Length: 311
Image 1 (cartoon, rainbow, N blue to C red):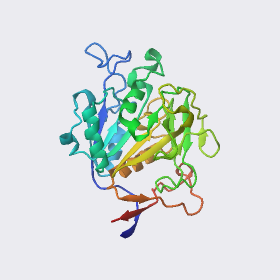
Image 2: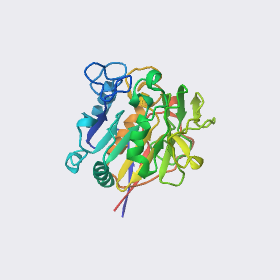
Image 3: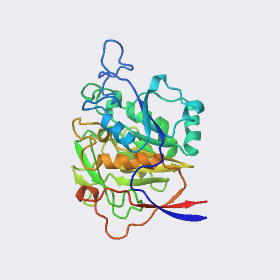
Image 4: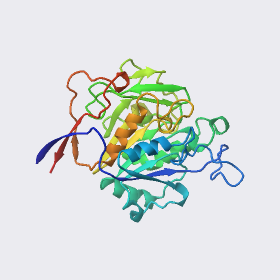
């Protein structure tokens, strides 16, 4: 075996990324139809407040290509996935079939990367359909439950900022960046199930920066008594990787609550995209050397080192 120390300071290899979006009206109608406007589709081509044009530009700046696909016209087949390296599941409504999930699992285990998150807006405007509508949770559950990853319904309790724990063991997070969202649908997992908690969602001085991280809406979850909650979690599956995030708002340009420009959201997303786009050798976490300096407190904004073990 060859032991290589890799310093990840800039972009990963150029990869093809697909962003999947849906179409729901404010009242929950899917699709929105000819007489209603789509609600917060968060398109890569949208330069408005709730668009993702800044996220798209960041991805391109890292040397990757990115395109968007509408969920209802997409078939998750082996042929489609053969040309894709990373999938970002944005707010969408499609419940993928057993055959599509099998194709996705094969692709993931072969080295694919997935970023996924939830929000009440997957089901429409919260003031009409309710902040705890289960549309987004059900979509994520349909894809992620077999990997030990769940998401709560939207907690609808305001803007929250949380930072990575000290000595978390992952070089991507040893400088303790801060992730901020609003409302939030925390990632739920059982400790020891293979899910790693990059940024915990906990109400303690070690992690909580702003707001009070509380999870008091547990509908739709399984194994409730054993769950921990995370703002940013990851899971390796074969040679592939999943990253689950607690909210949609770190993605958008300048919407209400939070956005890509708040705290360390942009830098965290940059690291996540490159992590998912990297080839997938065995990753051995490297302990932090000395107390890390948080990005949000004047850190240098690099990802640190990853110890890669290659056959």
